[in-house]
Length: 311
Ligand code: MEV
Image (cartoon, rainbow, N blue to C red):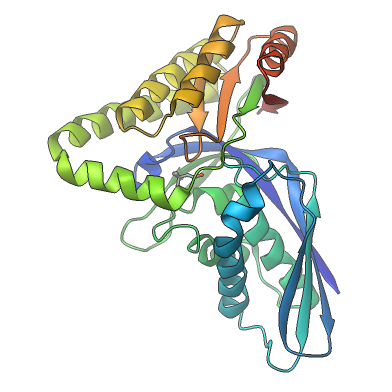
């Protein structure tokens, strides 16, 4: 028997852009998915998924989740011909689109298999195994979700498009920043959205060149602002990042609605986070009192809201 955990995450800057080698900034959440692995007689593996989840999430992601488990088991070369694995997923991370639930599941499984079979894997190898799992969700994952899930903390991430080592720097911000995460309740398909962006980019190369340039500039400024603890600039840049995500068509009406609710109730910055067209919206508050007010307004509008701190 072995156990492992993987953190959830929120992308502060750069979802979708990160797939193309542009920098992104993500923060791990305090909540996580756990995996328990029990070895029994028989062959193959079975899963008991006890994770709390947004209604419909597990059904929509079922096939991809099963494939991701296969990928992790195969990558780690675990023998499932002469023994059977009973895998249980649980934890306090609410599985929803945008929260890095798939990566948290893959990371927790890699850690639990490491524990069960005493594989002696370091974090880099755990991260690599989780990345193989993430490939089941779309062909070209940037790797930011599994990296945040494995290492935790606030990270600056650049995917190495040549297949070499990705850039990952842990950032320290001197100021704790209150964040509200609003859940649209809609589960989006990362596979579909990443493919849509790729198609749009191929059809409009000039437009994307300009958007990518603008985004790159914004990401560098966001890193500086986080390092300085300049919450106002971080918030302004979140608003700008949201506008760029609208331009590449990944922000849906529901995301824009949640952004408006947050901004109309005291948030200084708000944006969709993760895949988009549903999923989650994050907003930044200057104080914990305002954070409470934003969360209340989101709940009054009929959506779930979670509060967390960045930094
Ligand atoms: C999904 O959480 C983030 C995306 O940028 C996909 C990826 O990075 O692989 C949409």
